[in-house]
Image (cartoon, rainbow, N blue to C red):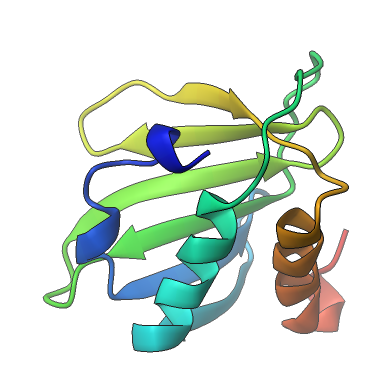
Length: 117
């Protein structure tokens, strides 16, 4: 997945974790944000399916608060929607059973339990 991430990943300083229903789950800043993006970068690829009904999203911001990109994760059909500012979304397949994908899901779920699926 590393090659499919936006070029602005190195500029990301703050990440917001959202449900795609519009609930803010929490934030990661600085080194924690970098660790989350490294997890996403190490997702192994897989053949995607068709539903693309993402349950979680990450919005990335620069240190000065500029929106950089968002990533939407569908753990059912194995796609990550990647959208850079001013661009159309593109879909990248991933293996939801991989260690990094499971760890990211655990990080989403570790936020507010009342907003879980």
